[in-house]
Every structure is written in structure tokens, then in C-alpha cells.
Amino acid sequence: MKIQDLNRIFGTLLILINLFFFIPSTLEILTSNDNGEGFGILILLMNFCFHLFIVTGIFGWLSVERLNTKAIRVSLTVLMFLQAPISLVNVIIGFLTIYKKIKIEQALLITNIIGFAIMVLVKIVMNIK
Image 1 (spheres, rainbow, N blue to C red):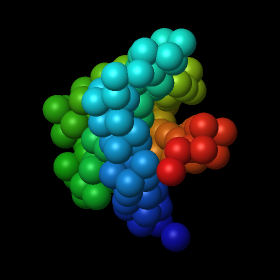
Image 2: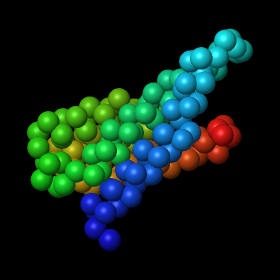
Image 3: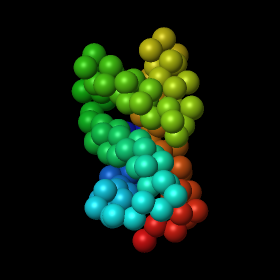
């Protein structure tokens, strides 16, 4: 299976898990009046980082030629650094991409796989329905 096909698969999975689990969870936190113990704000920060994976999921559908444009490379690297609160691996991948040690499509695939794995684990642990 080619890297581009894997990017499309994991990109689609990231978008779907965001649409069905994390966006409704964010809306529920924003609209609730329950102050509780303040966990809502912490979860909201984590959800914001998960919503950034929607953009990397969309990038998974771009062709290799479009991924190698300067604007997409810079955008993807910035997204990797913004996702640092939930995955330090993305920061390392961002540096490797900047110094051209790995190709952009490989960096995108690794980012999407890590994002998907973290989102599934959070969903299981928090029992988001």
C-alpha cells in the first residue's frame, strides 16, 4: 500500500472521529452550565488540539506535489508544533521535516497515525459517547 493511500485512510478516520465524538463533546462543554471541578476547561484544551488534526486529515488527501509546496509544508510544521500539548512526537517530526530528514508525506502519515491512536485512547478512557 502506498503512503498516499495510508494518508487518505488515516486522514478520513481523523476527520470522522472528530465529527462524531470530539466536536459534539466540545459543544457540550461550551454549552453546559456545570462548573464541576473545572475539568471542562482542561478537556477543552485537549479537544482543541484534536480539532487541529482535522487539518492534517485534509492534508492527507492532497497529492505529493501539492504537499511539497512551501505553504503546505509551513502549515503542516506549524500544526505539528501546535499539537505539542498532546504529542511531543509531533514536535520531533516537525524538526525532522524542517531539516528535510524525512519526506513531508511520511511526516504527515506519522502525525495522522499518532493523532488517531491518541484520540482513540482518549475516547476509550473518557468513555465519550
